[in-house]
Length: 349
Image 1 (cartoon, helix red, strand yellow):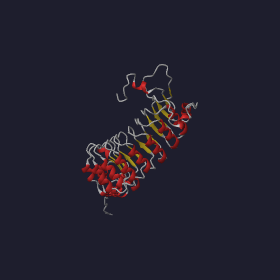
Image 2 (tube, one colour):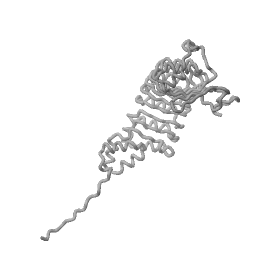
Image 3 (spheres, one colour):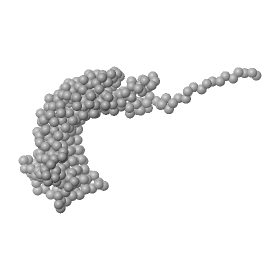
């Protein structure tokens, strides 16, 4: 029998990625947050293009990965498929980004809710005005280290972003109680607020304590115009407070720290440096604790709370101190004068 034998060439072996479902590919692609990389992946094959363009892969983009080269022109070139899905934008350290990029994204990204503009020096008050006017969904805003953040800009944010929960404006020296009070009155959902080195007073703390009862994380480092009276008001009202930074607040005394620890059971991270103001008498609520024998350091240890108290490397003679490295308590009793030294220098020195 002279039957003819036909040879069938085997097809190419499918790759591991070809065997993955669309759902698994979606999970993988979500780990890629660089816009340029996602564009390159979408050009690999038709299937990858469909997954990337239809599964909302573009909701979180980290432009800081290309911070040296990213400018307004690159932002303007983003395709519509990116803009329609975008929710979180990270421009961290993107020094070439201007208000034009933010304006472009605001008007083309209906779902956008987070802007990280940390150290973006070209961002001005116009961006805050645009965010307050066109971004009612804004949930997170970081404009740290920007001296162009003013009271007017914060008022725009307060009036137009009632759902704001996380606001970080440390080292922004151009706003005062006016802008901070507007935020406190109009943004009751605030959970995180960092106003390190702000020129605010107890008036801001009073307003925060009355309106922002959900606050969990509060940064007040270097806010030298606040005092123990304002801190005690926080202890009275903010019962969800978890983290509080009071370092270098020169008018905040030890007595108010004692009140905080005793009356805010949720407090787990308290950073504080002892100042010459050990006691105050301006507020009756504080005065009643003057002779209290409550052992607040033991309370901290029992409650597994964390305190950085003092930060001096040089200690006065015969001054007691202790620290626990195994647990979660770190206590160091040192005065501001010992930290700065007998010459009266500053922390920056």
